[in-house]
Image (cartoon, rainbow, N blue to C red; front, side, top):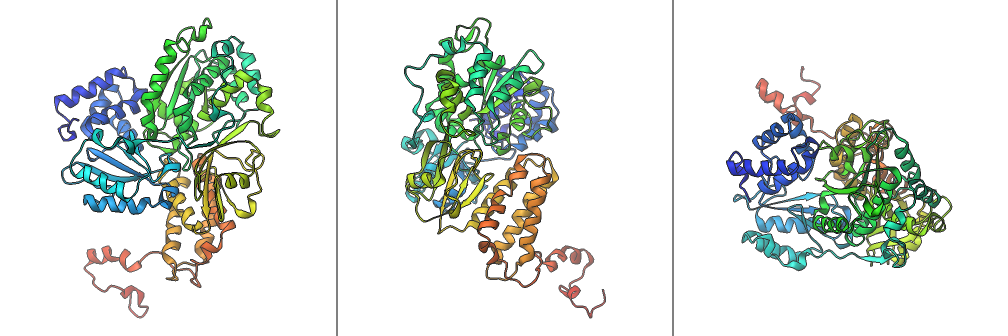
Length: 610
């Protein structure tokens, strides 16, 4: 590890140059260059960013803007060992905040601080995709520790205080167990007697497209756009070079299905990407792997190496003359908004993950201006099965409007968290019964951007025509305060806003402030019905006036909990009339200091001249 304080030294410069050379000094590789350089230096001081900017022919402002955008890039010193506690609501329900406080007390640091010797720093991050085995934390962004408890935290503190290298920590701490509770199709793996990929790709591109169209497959990332229609649009777009991208930026809190598919069914995912490339005429593929899943990178790279050796990737892939296709892995750096396909493409191009204005759509002009198909991990896994067993087979599962199966990441107040795969059209009640949930008050379906379903609605089904879902299924029993759940989700959206548009950048923060006021008002009588009315107003603005889906869905938890659990808000809004949420005396204190006045509170006396 090179000391970041020695950042202008020749060893650091040489290390950065080696990374730049490995990426051929390509500006669109900036995110990967920053990631690999930081792995050497621990953080990214301005002189180092200036050196990288000059080497890539970019402005320092651009490089600093990218470095400052992603959560896992550090432009200020951090500890040699960085610990980030997963801060999803399910981790909090399992006691993560108490464990964070315990570790910080033992280490003598506050969250976000570095100890005096620069050995370690502790902080929070958004959901790490380990909700079935939380509380969890990330170590140096590329290793995970699951199932934290007080004893494990104490042992962790001892190792950190002794400056013990991470490589010498107990190996069992880093075990990630894929808790598959029910596997209908995708989680069961490809049938042994299914045709091999070369036989599948021997079909014409149009035949492959026709099978996907017949299947009725819709994207499993949440939006549910028909897969075949997206592929056909990309195939028909002008241009000689096309790209297929697998969106593995599974950032929706409460979702962890893609983690398991990548860990246990990577070949099926890569098969699906290859089928898509053949169907649309693509030559280049990317797996965009979220930064929190960095620990999966080595085994995924091994799978790709094996597939190249087997002739499944590269020139004349799968023995199809003239079909050249390969896949590279791009690692994200911690940004929820990059789950949106155009923001993901911006990140692939080495930029801030800011959603693009559309049209043009990615299928027309995506990565580097080329027609680009973006689908998520579960969608490509489904394609691998459809290509082998036919579109009619998949269409026979589920409902007429929602064909096939759906994987659900179940966590929260249930006896058996984990992955459950069902045909679409399965009721919420059945999933709750199967996972051992009791006395359930509500279920958050599809993550914070989805729907909060009260007990009266558990007869509804998971289907595009009823309750669509990106895969998260968080259970809350009657001991939980749904106001606090909504407040936690509001903080998440405010933190993850890319900041491009004012309604989202400002609106999400105003929602948090209003909810904080209600939270602190309980029993103090400092919030009123006016505050709840303003929340409704903010919901309207965000839902209709933001640049992308993040802002439009940011108030979904607020809207649903106000509708179904309004009493949780009303019991906090007890003041008979509006109460300001600022201390006017404190706000005027700086003006009094400048003018030399000491009459605090005098402005409140109507008998005193202004």
